Length: 258
Image (cartoon, rainbow, N blue to C red; front, side, top):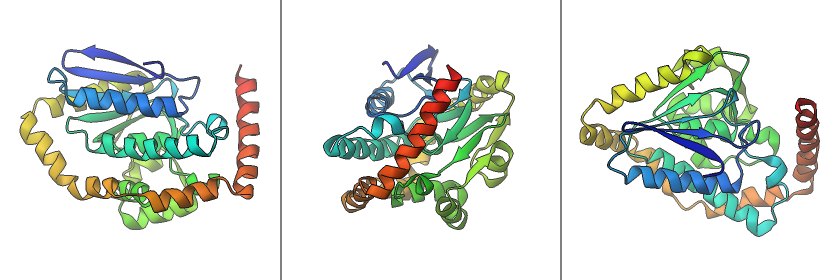
């Protein structure tokens, strides 16, 4: 896989996102992650999974620079697959822990909230869903996923504001479950996933699917109408203009970092 690395430690698999400086999510990463998770689910030698990033970035979210250049057909396929990935991750029956190694806005946050537990590194990092300020219509599946952890009231308010939270704020809000010094992040994640893996796997996985049944069913609903509206807005001149400005800022930051 070219967008992430996998390492095996006994029955534990660590998926480390590895795409550029900020692990921005493109269509290739979406498809590779979905394929990987499906294979791990069906592998009896795998008991649990940790999803992590690199120092400073878990994932900066959708790669706007690349996604902006997708044509209409490519854009539709990307969003179809990205929404499907949310379902695949959420319905994964084995323990899945996020070791959030840095910034995790938008799509990065979505990957994290599909997991069973989130440990985030201390630092001046942000996490949250800021799709609306970017110009992306929020599908109800994302709201349902966010509300599963935050509650409907807080999820609604945060989404409508495009609120990004600092690490301490995220812990207080219940968006993450634990904070760790960067050097101890993986140990904390391993400790949690190992605790899950020590429990009876049939009991644990079936209980997980039972407790997530309503959420999983909501993520399986046909979202064609919502997707059509998302794409219509994605191609609207005002949205494209806003995206162009954001992309110029991203390119300037990337140039400065190099």
